Image (cartoon, rainbow, N blue to C red; front, side):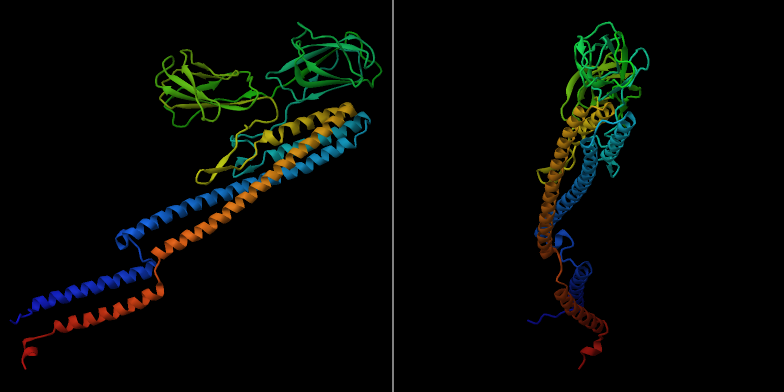
Length: 490
């Protein structure tokens, strides 16, 4: 039986073949232009799944490498600052080590040199990277260090016409006046004194002025406020019975203005209380509304560790004053709170440092973090206190105290050198991680390339073959279109 192939069947077969060759040709052309043999899931469903996994891994590695680079930059700049500070401390120790009690003007000049060194160290300790303070702990927007205010001494009110020098770092949480009264006059080592910190209402125990002339300023309970007063008997009249000296001490403790978070529903105003702040460390108090409503209805909780833990506070009082801890409070005017409205206030303890002790942790691997900063209190707080005390000891001509604080500064240098060494190890560790990720990234990229990328030499050869086939098909198609009945008559 002979089956006749109709013209329609012949044409359909030709068109089907033509479309098939064109699609194959277009696919090769796409792979050549993209240089990838897998351009969509349908090209290789299993392979595309692997490619997506490889892409995710490469993206994570890229982020880790960026984090490592940032951490390395932070550590490197921190190390540079500390090395500069180390040189400055050496200058201060050299001044102290070579000190011999000279004239008042000579001592004042040396003390001013120490003051300038301290100011240079504070400037270095306030260094920034990308507009963030290096040494503020996690409070990177807060300037970490300011010089503390020196105590002042009232002039007059006594017969003694020698010099008096007050110094040290005041550790109380509120300003205070110390009244020093000479009970029995006489030479240094003989005269006696007593101290009142409440305007003379109560007095501490009566003690003898040391031969060095330096006394500690304490309250009526003999609590040390961190300040000293030195008598230098270089005038014509020594300490006389009834002489009184008032030392004004200024705290550096403070409670900063309260801040309402952007996006809060609460439209009233919030202010911080006047304190004083009685805490011993710098803290940021965060207050979060846990129950909606107005004053007397809304509830809150608060955190003192950057939101890591929260303490149930209770109901916002109808009067609007929320008392937290250590003298910190927030005052709210009338308004309606929504759940998760947030408010914060920074509280600063006495001393030079206004940051916190938190580390900045950065991800450098799955489940692995590394701290990239050095909180300022770790490196600088004792150092600046010792520099301030060295300055006072030089002013007062007290060589024993000068030697004491030179030794303290040498210990501070040891601490700084230890921190610098640890930073060096950290930078080396970061380099090791970076190199490891580079190797891993290359291996994953190779695996991805084996599945995804086109062998351009083979693909171009294949494309040329299919191009030839396509041209042949076009030629055949053109001839079929020109056939007539006469072509079949012999």
